[in-house]
Image (cartoon, rainbow over all chains, first blue to last red; front, side, top):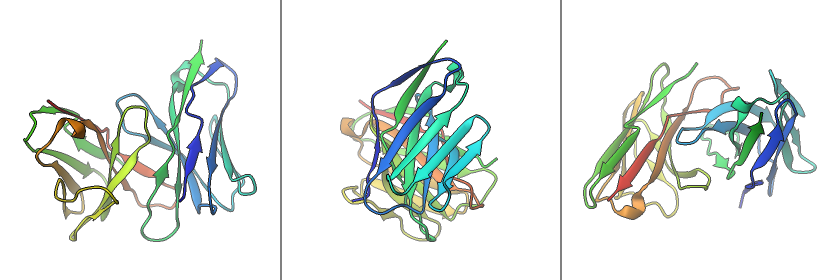
Length: 113
Length: 116
């Protein structure tokens, strides 16, 4: 089965440092990976999508990488702020008109002032 | 940006009653919407895919007669939890994909259902 594995343990990081979250997938490489932010009691908010043929994608302080050899995506937040504290979800999808997305359990990030 | 509005944000109902949750795409048309359920400290689990004008597609293990889905227009999908029981208490979230290849899925704000 196609699985998405994220470290379910919380990640604590000092404000100003770079936070790095890991997402590993099993079986074949998905056409793309997505990263979402979820705050308690809220729906996820889409952050970035990276395609299989892209090695890196950036958006402001966010950077995502896609390594098909390691079957892994890394999500970086540079110059982290307390407001970045949330749970970050990784999701994999398949290309095609009908797209079903499988989510990881998410990693909770706590940025300490 | 694309917005999906979900209502209500929370609901408490008695065991045996039915609850309807609405999901609307406000500024785009969604021929397909997705319904998820999330238990505490667990990942989002896809329950069903709602297709405008046709029957919903349910994931394995999800009872279609218990979780009724109606997608009557291009902007509205509803999920009705019928004969709710305490084990149905969960966080229900809908999503849709706005046009554009670089878009991820836009989620509603979720509905916290508590069955007492």
